[in-house]
Length: 77
Image (spheres, rainbow, N blue to C red):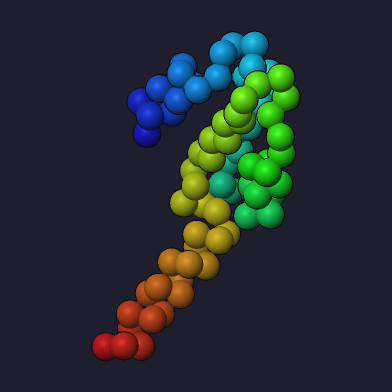
């Protein structure tokens, strides 16, 4: 994962663009609403924004999805 993150950081935005257009959040500290808000915001003086979600497995939405998936699998057995 570090290699992918580094490749994105090196190629998607220039150093000047990173100041305003790079968002790094941790799944344990964010929720889906916050991520959507960041993702929907317009880039500033650039063509795009980059949103990196570290520890995405800690997102509440992911945990809820995992629980539902396991529950569905157990109920269908």
